[in-house]
Length: 243
Image (cartoon, rainbow, N blue to C red; front, side, top):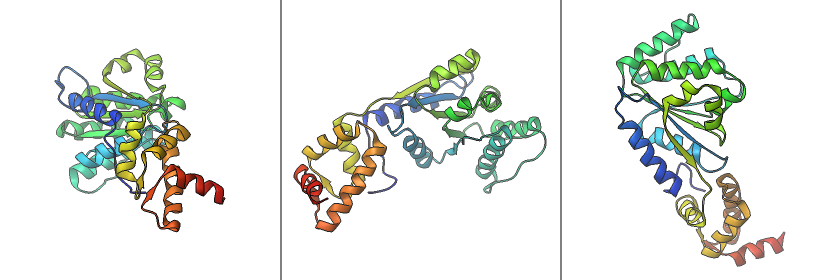
C-alpha cells in the first residue's frame, strides 16, 4: 500500500474549497478558526496532515491527556521552529507562555496551524485549552484549522456560544461512495483492483477508509504470493477457499 497519498474524493475536493475560502477571509472581520469534522475513518486526519505538508503549515495532534501547559509548549515549539528555524522551549506561568506565543503570532499573521483531535480536549473537559485557541484567534491574525469527530461541532456550540461563533467555516466529512473508493484505490494500491472487487470492498468496509486500508494490505499480500498485478472478486473467492 502506497503511503502519503491522498485521493481527490468528494470530501477532499469540497474541503479544499472551504479552506481556500477560509484563508481568503477578511481577517479584520472574521476570526481565524475553521472546523473539519465527521465520523471516524473518512480521511479527516489524512486531509489535515496533507494540507499541512503541502503548504508547510504547522500541525499538532491533541492527546487524551492534553494539559494546558503541554499544549502551550507544543504550540510554541512549532511556532518557534517556523520563526527561528529550530524549536524553542517555553517556561513561566501559563499566562506568560500564552503571551509569548501571541507576540510571535502577531509578528507572523501568515501562520496556519492544523490542530487535530480537537475532540479530545472537549471529551476530557479541558476547556482551558479551547480558551487558549480562542485567544490566539481573537488576538492575532493567524489561522487555526481544527479537526474533530462527528459530534465536535455540536459539542463546541453547547460548550460556549461565543467560542462557536468564532468558527465561521465548517466542513463535515461525509460517507464515501464507490466512486470515491475507486479514486482512493487508484492512488494507494500497489496492484490494480477490478471494478467488481471495488464494489465488494465498499460493501464490506462500509465506506470506512481505515477498514479499507487493512483489507487492501491483505489483498496485496495475497497478490504478492500469487504474483498477481490485478485482483478481481474471483481472486478474493479463491483466497477465501484457500484459508
